[in-house]
Length: 290
Length: 75
Image 1 (tube, rainbow over the protein chains, first blue to last red):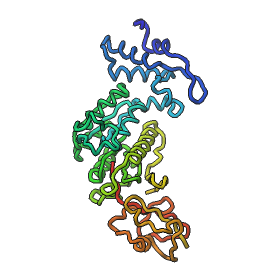
Image 2 (image 1 turned 120 degrees about the vertical axis):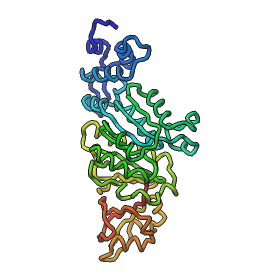
Image 3 (image 1 turned 135 degrees about the vertical axis):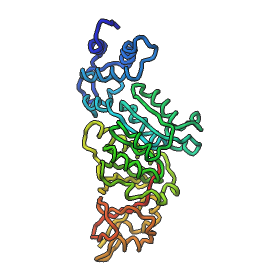
Image 4 (image 1 turned 90 degrees about the vertical axis):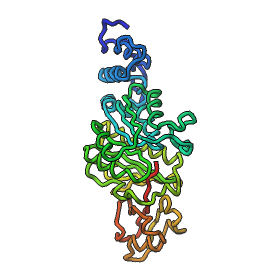
């Protein structure tokens, strides 16, 4: 592309009109144009850097032009909200069942910066539900599989994998600079510490857990009571008996990400001070205020 | 007087056959109900009535929807 043009001029020149899913019209920056422009920003580097891709996408959105990969977001999330997502940083603890599905959705949606921690390695019993667990990733670090997956889906996402189990001191450091924390932990033990540290960091915590066909999703604002205050760290957890089948795990993760994206967009947290409790055996959902 | 009862996860085995219209007596509390259902107190972590978290001493009223939830932490 002509180097004499500014980035904005290039974006305008390469964009095309497109029909939105709501019947309106908008301008779209084609997928390959984002890659080309990011490459040119990277001064001839063979592969476009994630930062350059993010900058191109942000510049397009500022001009009211939607990057093609977010076209199907654009009637749900406004351009301003998509910009907020791309400028957000989410800290996620746990890359198992909940974390894998949640990461997939957040990366596809265009959360610009995600750090995620899990010190665990994949084992065959994870294959029933954990999106990042494949025949190929067995025995490898969950954090490594997560990094590979995010890069494959959306290289504009600045993803920081941490292959370590976080104690409370590490959680405090891990949450620094994040606009929101995601509790995708397994088991009850570490959840109270994450709730405390999110409160200390002054950021919302979106949390979920499942056992069998049942589960919940909740949002805890700093200083408020959360599910882990009710369940405790040392109780006998129901999943030890009932296991963790895929539908409940994927449901909880999807609900969690819908709430995360609402919050990142600057919308009111819908589950603040409440739990959305579900049972997929009876197909029931109920909102419970805490 | 009747309530509906929903027992979640590991508590589902305590669901009475008449959970959709479970007869209660005037003045009966959640604690009384839980005892009648045979649910061990250590297994019950969260009780909600009509979508609001309540304590065990909460009284029951006709038509209440009672939810009983154990500790759940799986991911």
